[in-house]
Length: 326
Ligand SMILES: Nc1ncnc2c1ncn2[C@@H]1O[C@H](COP(=O)(O)OP(=O)(O)OP(=O)(O)O)[C@@H](O)[C@H]1O
Image 1 (cartoon, protein in one colour):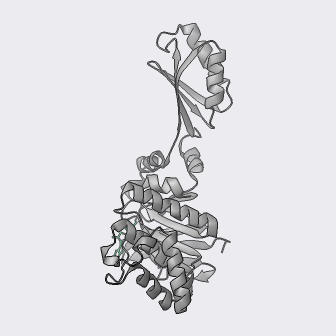
Image 2 (cartoon, rainbow, N blue to C red; image 1 turned 90 degrees about the horizontal axis):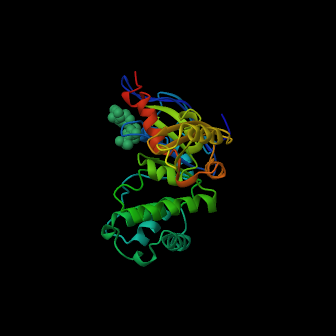
Image 3 (cartoon, helix red, strand yellow; image 1 turned 180 degrees about the vertical axis):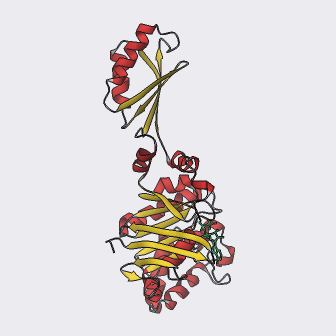
């Protein structure tokens, strides 16, 4: 086994003849925010259930905090907080009492339970709603209470399954910020399962792309982007004066020559009045300087770094979504 706080090796789950998770290898480091990204039915929840020891793998191994989750789920449960997409609370209990209840279940003394619950309610921005019944909480408040609920036992890892479902955009932003803050300040490892590309991209240090029970790719966004876009992770769109369409052939050749000489530039395409430049690194400053020094006016420059949506799209175009399962 490797040194990750979560280590999956050849992890496989079959339901009858159906392969839900297919020989998964994954290592998540301590303190990392890792995103499990994939469409519905990709196998994310099944993988999480195996990490929690709640369903038995058909093959391979799963180690969480150095513990075999399959043979010792109780020890794993002590160290891992799991937030499902819809948390169950005692609706007639206040937010505070729900937290105290969970703390007591985790054998925390009454006094300690109350002080931790109050401090966590503050942390997740629910101090004012502490004595309000959980049944009267909004969806966003319930998720924040859910986060406090998983944190009350001081876990080393929190696993969040589609935690922002049904929360408004402002609430989503606050929730995600809170997760990153917790991870950074307390070296908390976070595994976030989602099919919201944008959210995953915003907060995760690394991402695993799941399709059809397999992990198709893994890494940080620049690395994934680098692997997929023929090493052109960046694309600059440029307009100059005189416009590319009205440039003489000599001027065009001059432009091409000065842009190609910029380190990192791999492709240059003229289309209408726009020049598209592919680069392996962020060459925006050097390209703009080269254009101006060559005597052209730079009237527009857009620097596009490929994001997770393009990356995801590429995997689907590559046939990932057509189904890998056998
Ligand atoms: N208990 C079960 N019995 C049979 N098939 C199952 C069972 N649980 C899950 N599956 C199937 O395994 C596949 C993976 O499901 P899983 O819930 O892990 O996907 P997911 O990526 O979490 O999707 P979602 O985002 O919809 O939750 C799906 O095709 C699902 O229908």
